[in-house]
Image (cartoon, rainbow, N blue to C red; front, top):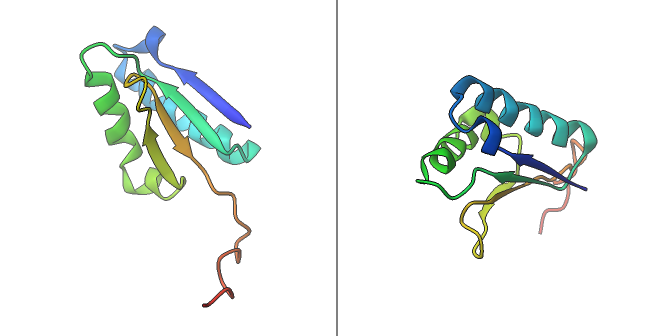
Amino acid sequence: MKIKLDLHDIFNKGQEIDRALRGVIDEAIAKKAAMVEIIPGKGSGALKKKVLRFLDQREIKQLYHRVEKDGDNWGRLFVHFRHDAPTGRRGRGR
């Protein structure tokens, strides 16, 4: 499952951007989505930087697995999730 968030309509509303980003992260966790596609758009790049700063916050960063920048469309980001069981990675020592 993939969830999509297009920020074009709220590109200049800082508080709404943060709420929308937090909301889509929470939705992905609740629905166990594998990925969230975030579209900050191309523009000046300021909104993309804001999104990346949001995602880099410690309390947010621990909620997802990794962020991927789209190599073909620099106005798009992918946030990947792993929904492991609480002990999913333990006990596999090699």
